[in-house]
Length: 296
Image (cartoon, rainbow, N blue to C red; front, side):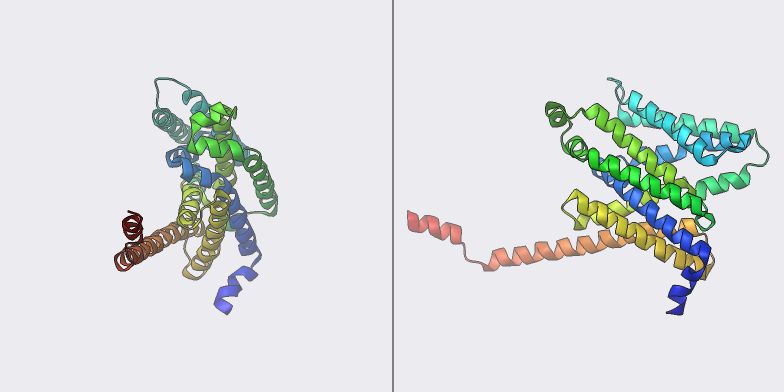
C-alpha cells in the first residue's frame, strides 16, 4: 500500500490532487451539457481560442489567467453573435473563430523569442506546480459554475432536447445558449492551468461521455462525470509519480481510457440484455395471441 499512498504525502502532489478534483467537478457541470448537446467542437475551439490572450499576457508580464479569461470571453461573445446569423451554421462560425484566434495567437507568439516554455505550459499544463491561491480560485470557479448550472438547469434541459419548446415556454433559448457558452468558458479558463488548453478537452468530454451509458438523469451524469474525472486525477498522479511522466497529460489520457472502458462495458451489457430478451421472447408463450383467440 505504500506505493499507493506515498506520493500523496508530498505537499505539491496533495495540491495537485485537490486541483484535479476541483477541475473535475467544474468540468462535469459544463461537460455534461456539451455531451448532451453535441458541443464538443465548441469546447475544442474555446480551449485553443485562449492562446492570443495568454500570449499577450506573457509578453506584457501580466497574469496568464487574466489573459486567458479575456481571450475566452471574446471567443464566447463571437460564438454567441455568429450563432444568431440566419444563414450561417453554428459549426461554420465556430470554425472560423477557431482558426482566426489560433492564427492571431501564433502571430503574437512569433513576436517573442522566449515564449516556447510558456507555450508548453499553456498547451499541456503543470498540475504539480499548482499553488494554494490557485486552489482558492478553483473553489470559487466551482461555486460559480454550480450556481449557473442550478439556476439555468430548466432552460438548459429545454434547450438540449427541444429548443422550440423552450421558446414556447418563455425560457429564452438565446440567453440560455449564451449562458451555457459562458459556463463552458468558465470551466476551460479554470482548468487550463492544471491540464493545459490542449488537454482540458479530455476532462470536459471524456468523464461525462463515460457516465452517460450508466445514468438516466442529468444530475446522475454530472455526479458520475465528477467521479470519473476525480478517479482519472488519482490514477494519473500515481502513474505520473511512479513512471516519471507528464502529470497533466497522464490525467487526460486516463480519463479517455476510462471512457473507452465504460463504452466497451456498456456495449457488452447491452448485447447481453438484448440476447436475454431475445431468448425470453422465444421461450415465453404467445400470451397476447392466445388471449385474442379466446376472446374471439
